[in-house]
Image (tube, rainbow, N blue to C red; front, side):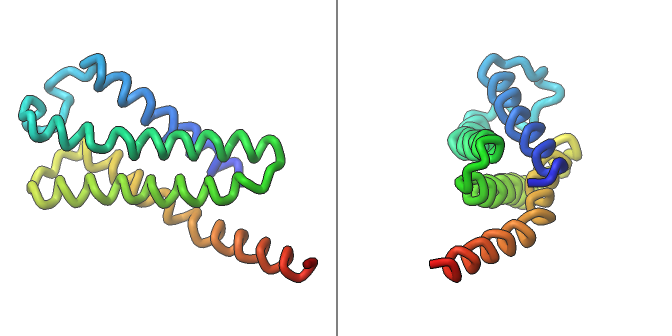
Length: 139
């Protein structure tokens, strides 16, 4: 796992946890929140991401743990975390686009979530594939 990916995982996974803590305790001032922040349907929509974002953080942080332990389990966890992260960003961007709400304060973080995994997924899939091929040759 590259140093860049480790850093991005730590940043992203810890940011998710901080965001949900701030959301739960209403630490985000309404003027910095998304449009229609007090709309109950939008609040529910936002909270619908909570399980997904926690799963992203769990798989990302666990992948770092298993990488440090030199366990091969880290690779599938990284793959899962990257795919889920990109999906989380895509869902939010799709929603904001359909709603025609183009607030950069919400687009930029979600475009980050959508796009950063795409830089690492091809190499990771190749690495997992080569790892599988070499294990099959040894068997």
